[in-house]
Image 1 (cartoon, rainbow, N blue to C red):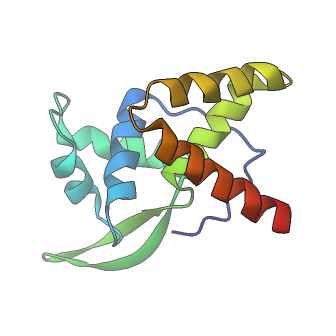
Image 2: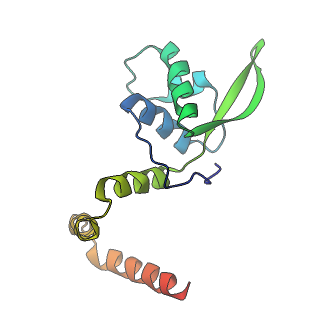
Length: 135
């Protein structure tokens, strides 16, 4: 994964696009269109739709062609994400809470409140804060 996507350029994924991205995010290696379609759980749409989904993801610069390789008797493209799942989540968080820092802090507090092991989370957050201050 490249991880070089400018986080300030924001895009939104449809449900089908997100399903394809989740497959790519879970894979350590680039995948062809057929592999992506086959790995989408509970897919109810035809696998042939994956080509149009991948074209849209390429236009959004969410994925790129990693390589062209022989697949069966012909050649096909293998895709990899250009943005991680965490980078996408931050992008959506920033898009939603743009200019509302206090609401963002409230969300973090809410997320922490839903966890059972608050002490471990607090310690991990403190460690992150310490690292952030050192940089």
